[in-house]
Amino acid sequence: MTSSAVPAEPRCLVWFRNDLRLSDHVALTAAARNGLSIVTCYVYDDTVDDAPGGARRWWLHASLRALSTDIAERGGDLLLRRGKAAAQVASVAVANAVAEVHCLKSHTPNGRIAEAELAKLLAARGIKLVLHAGDTLFDPEQIRSGSGQPLKVFTAFWNACVRSGSVGTPLPVPSKLPFVRSVVPGDSLDAWALEPKSPDWAGDIRAAWTPGEAGARARLAAFAAGPLHAYRAERDRPDREGSSRLSPHLSFGEVSPRAAWAAAAGRNRGENEAAFLRELGWREFARHLVWHWPRFPHESFRAEFRRFPWRDDAAALARWQRGQTGYPLIDAGMRELWHTGWMHNRVRMVAASFLVKHLLVPWQQGASWFWDTLVDADLANNAVGWQWVAGSGADAAPYFRVFNPLLQAQKFDPDGHYVRRWIPELSALPTEFLHDPSAAPESALRTASVVLGQTYPVPIVAHSAARARALAAYARARGNGSSAR
Image (cartoon, rainbow, N blue to C red; front, side, top):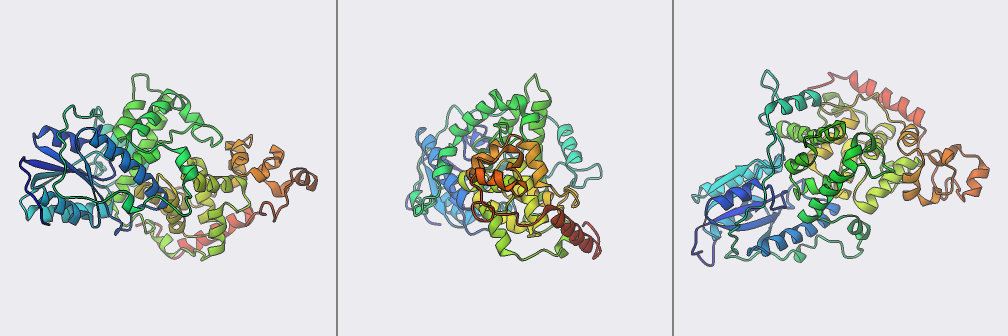
């Protein structure tokens, strides 16, 4: 941690993490108010187990480029470093002779470890680490039950959040940002090779999204002006534009949860706005669980699921990943994921349930695939969502709730628009057979040029048999011990 030059003016350092924005950035605003010149940095730490997957690396490249441009327009530069986060931030801080380092608090196990390591490194040099809230609406440490315990049931958690006080107003970009350049060089973003080159599989993802704070603002404004007003009824329809599609922007911190809250919590708040705020609440709940139980992302919360008779079935996993299960709604979702880096939330639940309950593949393998392919992959959301579906989490769906893919498709894609978009080989089938091609008469299949087992697969498993097998496996697991921690 050496420096080639000593800055003339007193400085502080703002360490950007999963908060790639300038507006409503509490750490940046605090730094701007302390009268010191501001150095900014971002560290790409791929040495931890929550390093970004392939789709997120593509998004990270675009988001960092946008943030770098925003900072450069204000006279600074975003210093990029790669390696262990604590060591790299401390090195930049010492080289620039900063008095303070400001950053937003992390909720992840690795993020908290990095904060503790950084605090020690900085203290040894007489530098102060200042941690700020900003990734959550409510402090996960402060939301407790009446007896002072962390909460395991969402409704009780959310009620406690709502009772805890106002969320507050989002902060604007500070009018004065005294950015300065670092006295030591950083890495080139292109040198990190975050974007795919050969082959470039990100073409469809690139066409579907606009990473960066400006893209996030535009997405939030479009949602607030349109889909929000029918959100409660439309958010479960993958065939319509009823969801917010804010998840990747929130995951990278290009928009703050407080800004998303403010967009929906206006004076005329009704059932649609309340439904959206409740979804933000699930994001809060996921962070609450991972904060209090750091093993949650990798280990089943309920004890009996650590003894569950999962199946090691690489072939079944691969068919699920490729969208070749023979269940059109699931296959449409998996193909949407592969092409766009995103999947509609209702379809995520059905696809995840199919993997863990119909196929008995461990939820961790599904979570790993989502981690690598989702642009909005988020450690807490990913783990809590998968454990909710598996029935192994804190406030989980009952294990006996096994989604029927056919009924889900008929209810939420009744006209087949979603399936036809992502499975064009079935597009000519009449709607009455679209979600269950194996039930179609031979004449309908022939007219639609569908050959089951060739142009489209037969179902990998029958729903009724798979459901019975899953319930039997759960009964065996429950017989081996208690049902929860």
